Length: 284
Ligand code: ADP
Ligand code: MG
Image (cartoon, rainbow, N blue to C red; front, top):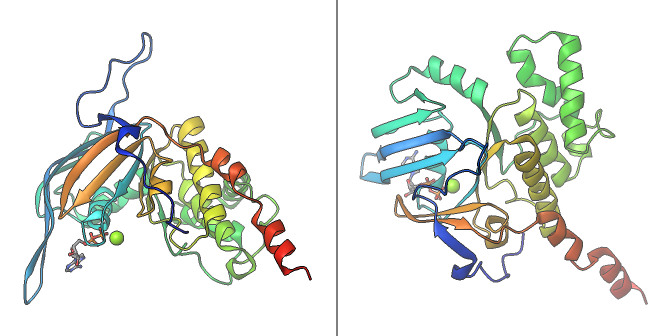
């Protein structure tokens, strides 16, 4: 997606997110932490050098947050997502996910935690080719041993919730990029995890489609309470989150509440009608 738009202005952000939040309104308990990184560091040791991909990261993300992680290439965003996603382990420090210290758990135990708590969405969609949308979405339930009828029911619901009820039997190559990413989101959510991790989910999508996907993520966050952590290098995508963490050289450089969270659906409605314009230009 084009990144020629103005980055969010500093004054759009009102408060540091790493200081204790305001007390919850009466009658509503404050959301509990879902992700806790305590002094997390990650070194990659190669023959030639040791890369300090993360250095001493302290971070708490509470249930219901929608966090965008930004920063230059190589700043440690994917390393952080891999640790948060229990795909990799910190070299030093502790990682607590949903009150469970997963730092020293075995690979198998972390896989169990991952399957129970986390849905993943990737830039490249990672759908199985020659496999229908419905089958792709059913797959995580197959791994869980859910019976065929229940699988079908839940996959249908998930595809319905991403607006793809009409595309159940299409294979990935019969779907647009945006539709493929929506199938991937349905697949990530069919197990009803409380946490969705997305590394550059709109990296392969145009502006319009990116905003559609973001609108969907905002709905899931707002109405289903799913906690979302999303990596992006696009300021207009980050502006759709409630909190923006900027990484630099393996550290959290800034961590700010986004006081003017952009509404992706509204931004989409305000885009010029590209198709009509192009059509008009192409007309003799
Ligand atoms: P980002 O996602 O922000 O672009 P990464 O987390 O992928 O950054 O990388 C952080 C740093 O760690 C970079 O210097 C990168 O080259 C290095 N790095 C990432 N993965 C590996 C690896 N498997 N082996 C060695 N170095 C790595
Ligand atoms: Mg990356």
